[in-house]
Each structure stands twice: as C-alpha cells, then as structure tokens.
Image 1 (tube, one colour):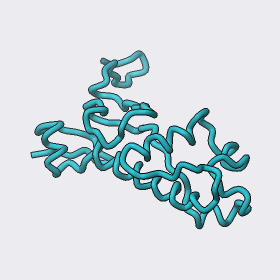
Image 2 (cartoon, one colour):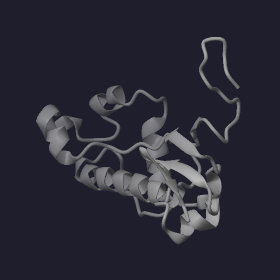
Image 3 (cartoon, one colour):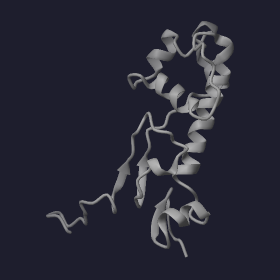
Image 4 (cartoon, one colour):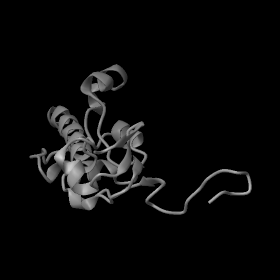
Length: 148
C-alpha cells in the first residue's frame, strides 16, 4: 500500500521489523521465535565484560545485587531474568551477592545471549535457517539474501 506521502507500507508481521520480547522463554529453543522476514529487537540482555566494569565500578559494585548494578539495569527485574535465561542451560552461581561469582555471571549472560542469537537467527546458509524459512528472501542483519 502507498500512504498519502507516497511511502510504501504494509501492516503485516511478514514484511515489517518485528520486535520479539520474551524474557522468560528458553532462548536456545528455536520454537520460541516467530518466523519473520526481519527482526531488529530481541530483548536478550547480557552484562558488560569485567574489563568494562573495572573502568567504571568499585570492587563493592561487582555484584548483580549491588546498587550500581541495580541502577544500571533499566528493565525492572532484568537482572533476575538474565540469570533465569542463563540458568536454563548453564550452572549459574546461586549467590548473586558474592563478588567472586560476578565474572562467571557476566560470562554466562554473554554465552546465553550468543547462543540465543545462534539458535533464533541462524545464518542464511545453515540447515537451521533453511529448515525454518525454506527458500525465501529474508533480511538478515543488514543484508537481504536469497536462500537458494
């Protein structure tokens, strides 16, 4: 359809950027993702590296339940959702206040997001992509590809 300014638009999840937010689903399960042509937001979160933290945080801030971490998290309950997401497949530390566990929590949050992207948004030439999408055009990242 063409709007009054002459721009093309379609009211359909098939042709638009879909934002997928499911903070408690297992991101490593491909069945939790909708099949869309383009998705630009996923809702997955991970923590910055220890190197990044070391440049701005005090030792007393290195806990998921510190004031620093809580203020940094803008999504209510987001830190606990990160732990939940990581805990589906990784043995996350139980004591979130212990600074000795913080590097592991950071690493697991990053691994969880990485694997969620790999499962939910496979590269166009991989068998999972072909299995989910067939031989159709899809926008993946910043390129549109024909999956032949």
